[in-house]
Image 1 (tube, rainbow, N blue to C red):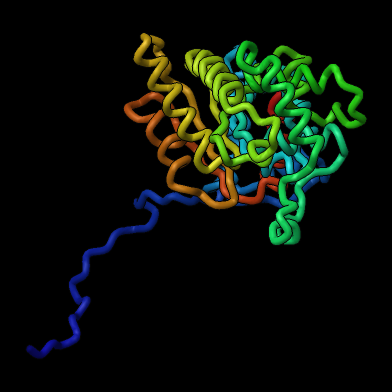
Image 2 (spheres, rainbow, N blue to C red):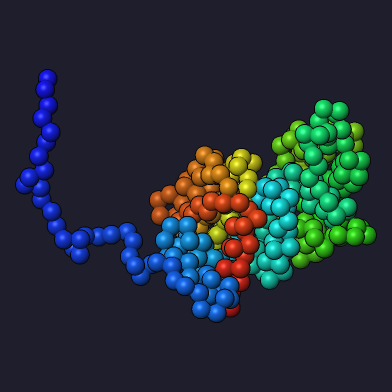
Length: 313
């Protein structure tokens, strides 16, 4: 077959002034005036992620003003990049009402409180078999979990241990802040994923029972999420899975958990959090899901300051 170039003669057009457009000059960024963070925030274009960032901050501030649940889920990278002081401040302000963590968070939170440092060089230590062999980390955490974890939950047991200690940097511990403030910190463990599981003090039965207690506490938190918000930062598998199971449990038990917002923050948007946090829980008019993409050490401070600005209004 032979083809001739098609002619566009006779094409039907319309005026751009009559067309619906996604972007308006009214949404463009503007130049700063006084150099304050509030000025910076208002200068951001009201488009895509910048618009979502401001919307999420407004939703969190509004939920806080109404006394709704604002639940945070997190992976250990949040601690490893130095964001604990911001999380603790939001807890002390009463903004964050609960935190769900994976097991690695406990390791890095404890080490920060105990030694003022964390995040070993795995590449350098793995070859010799020294990776994960910090004596104090395995001893203190496994002892606390075995002693009080099954009854109180893993997060509470570790938090109370750190609070009662003389660790020089315990003011940087999110878990200790939870125990001190009466904010539930739940820890959701996958056996074999954390360095403390390879230590001889590890008690599988106690750890499993403690994490189960925390799952039930977290489910109680999720049952109150109506008109609240759930933010997942940096957990690609564990917290999204736990959140979805807790949500279906409490809905099955008759809790009307609808009309809430969800947010996933990570430097890569993975399938599981997008599906189990952003999309599925908010289907059918149950709320709205957001995704904010970027490095935690940049995005979390931006969101933190945006929330603080919203709380002033």
